[in-house]
View (cartoon, rainbow, N blue to C red):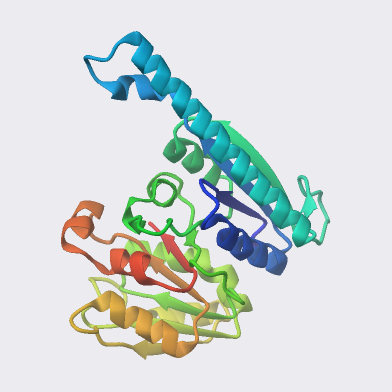
Length: 288
């Protein structure tokens, strides 16, 4: 199946342009449509958070300030989008059947980001999420986890700096879990077009389930020739070894399952998913 529609949730401008560049690179590769979505905060959501002891006037003032800040941010994001598409001569508007050029559109909605992004992602082939702003924890990204846990669709975390290519040398992080199987399914269109494919596996990464040779045999049935790369943890960190193996392969797209363990356990104890999200410097496509 071809990639025909990309969703790009934009909440700010610092990482937004790199994500736009990543999304446009993918759109040009597939002649796809990019829907840039900005979710504005509903000022009415501030009232329940204000707590007791605040007068009605104080709560109204907080709502007004929230509305003003939300409006300013929405204007900045839309201006950034308009400048970007003009600079790169991207055709605006919804694509028409048979069009062989990438297109883009912008939508601004009001509500809870995690709800609206997850809903829109259900009818997108891929959601490209900007890397969080400096100082923010990748693990706290509402858009990222909304897609992972509530859309049934793959999400791609854009690197902080826009890549030169996406999907020419693809790595599969494989550990035999249902999550990694979902990642393989989502990556199949990319694998069939890639110049080279590697299956990254390690004893400390593998769970109960099919091993890397089984995956290689399965991919061969789909016409994909994949080499198996066994890696070692770096300083006891499996995620670091996975990323090092991807880097040595010259990977420009890493596909893997997310949160084979619970998200809470990963947040408290760490884990492969969290390490990759926090330190990867290449596009990472994840599935649950």
